[in-house]
Length: 117
Image 1 (cartoon, one colour):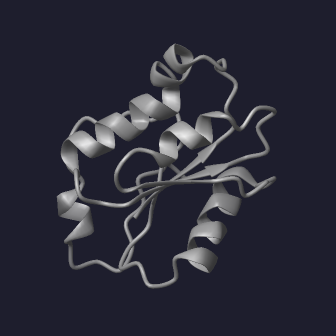
Image 2 (cartoon, rainbow, N blue to C red):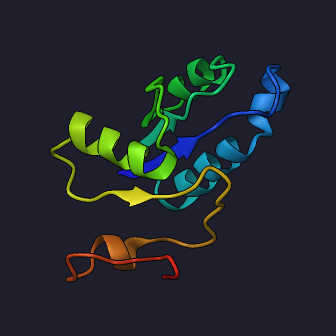
């Protein structure tokens, strides 16, 4: 399951939503992983109208979680509400993946980090 925390600020029209960073991120994931689940966890956005549109996309769940802890809070929301997933891949809402993550999803390692520490 891909997990995307989102603090949505990009406008309320359907055109704004379709051109938003989070929509670009979802579209890129679906291009490389059309059957994987995607969870978008809202991070206390002022306007949550975009969630209805995202929930209409196959395999996308958009949650009004009132998340105040951004990335960490989104991951905990995923653990708590989707505990039976085989894997979780947290991505920021501005990330657009350019290739498949199959090597990580199907890899032998217990944990992969795509971040710098």
